[in-house]
Length: 633
Image 1 (cartoon, rainbow, N blue to C red):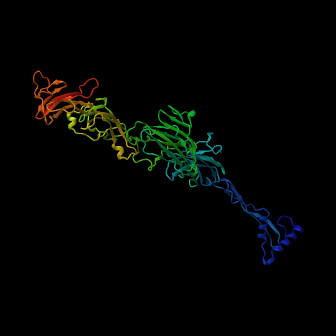
Image 2 (cartoon, helix red, strand yellow):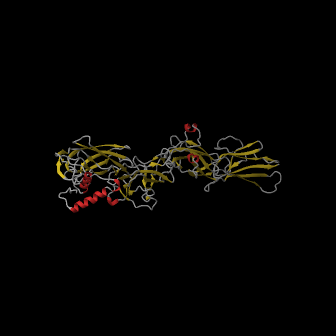
């Protein structure tokens, strides 16, 4: 009979044991009873085991003792034997864990926080040194700081203990230590979108320097990147007083919103803002508050400083979403007038510009838009040349209403003023009825053609005159011989811009002044009669009367009236009279004569007068009565 190993045997126990023993022999296999005993003890929980997943704290004493149970050959239980107790004290090993690698975004010029838990995975309390190194993979500048998160809040909130650290202090067995790592983008103006700042965090056991843990913290910059371009809309060659329209467009190509966008522009030199012209994104004109002071909140969002010529527009946030990431400002500047041709019309340095911030209010560098090369002329916009001229009498010889005899010369002194905004030269011409004109430079501006000025020869052009410069000239006109009495002439002297003609300006650019001339030519008439009238017999004395008159408005000079003594008659000596006064036949003034206007020459009588005045209603000085006598043979 087999006895129970658990104490006194009994029939029930014995019977169960025998049955179990029989089962163990089935299939040709028989387990040794002692081995079965051990298995049974393990199954019944009498053998103690330790979990492999748990670490034993340092200093723990591990003690065990071996026991032996056996029977004699007849199956009698022998006394249990036991070994000596053996002990092992668990020694300290170090271990540390920081968790998995982490990644965060950071706004440009801003910071981000990483919450990291340091876990003491050794088997005893330990202290850990904590350090960090970093590299900017895509350039830029950044900094990092390691803090103890004393209250586990995940923020640096100023509580006692939330300070920068390089050591954890003592961390209990299976304990942990909360860290905050702050990474700051310090790139001037902010890092570029996608730049990575990589920090490697290292924890090292003070107990065992070979026990370390590292993780990487990869920070990717999120930034707004605004670019811009300014174009000239329409005419890019404005003249004085003309408008010039600009459009500045800005696009956010970054990865983050550009916050609090503001458009600022000082007007280009020699211009002023058209207050009714400012629009945003093609909308209606916005209402501009115009003051001589910088804008205050009450003036915004749209303000123009008339003292500094600065336009300020608050545009708000500019998102980075394609299709919604552009904003355009259009405005018109009016050029000053007057303004010289070629003057540069350009924005001062730093204008226009777009200012913006990150979400935390840190300002990005200003965006100054480029100038569109297709609309901004090479070298910058220049004031276009405007052609204009004024021709007027100089006044020295005024008034310029002339009378003159055929062959007379007329003097018209005039000025040509270049009223355009650039240097120009002017052609001289005239529209005239009969007076011909020649032009000279009046160097001394006295309205008299001096010998030197005449020697310099006539001119056909004014010569180069700067803007607003006045040129002085003399026009000499001649009344052609044979011009009828009282004929009038309306002469318009014209100065025509050569510059405008060269540039094919649509309309001819001229200045002009008109003067009038009336010809005062003599008109000589002769009326002859004879007495007695009718048929007369031989021997009759005939008296011929000739009335010579100047019915013109000009003086008749060197007048000679001749009359042939008729055939079949004989001249009566000393019979000539002038205005009833006898005039002898010779051509010599003899006492008591004071003048001698008549004489006989061969077969003719002649009367000559130095002048016969023009007709006047008050006297008869414009006519003479001449007589002489003959006898019929």
